[in-house]
Length: 137
Image 1 (tube, rainbow, N blue to C red):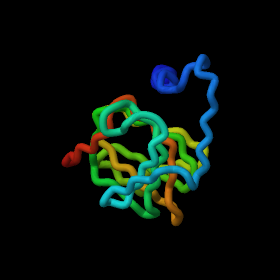
Image 2: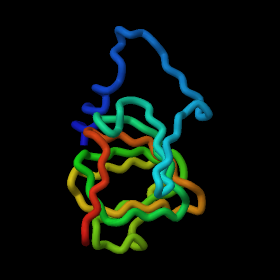
Image 3: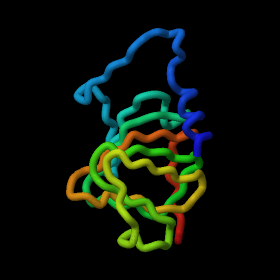
C-alpha cells in the first residue's frame, strides 16, 4: 500500500523549485466525457502519462464492468461511491464518503458507482495513462 503512495510523490515538484501552486476551484479546467464524467487535470497528461486529477461523477452514475491498465488511487472529496468486483452486486457494497481512500489495482475488473444524491468528487491518481476497457462479467 505504501508503494503507490511513494510513486505518487514522484509526480510532485521537488523542494528545489521553491514555488507554491494555488488553484481555486473556479479555476479548474474541467473536461467532460460523453458519459458526464468530468476531469480537471492537476499534474500530468492523463491520456499519455501517470496523472493527478479531480474527477466529478454525476449522482447515480454507475460504470459498466471495466478494467484499467494502471492502478487507480482515490481520495473522496464529496459524495459517496462504491467500488466492487465485476459480477458482484453493487448494492451490497459499503459506500465510501469524504475523506475515504480507495485503491483499485491495474487490470482488476470492477464497477464504480456514485451512490449519493449529490455528485461525487474524488482526487484521483493513476500510475499510468488513462484507459477504460469494458469487460463482460
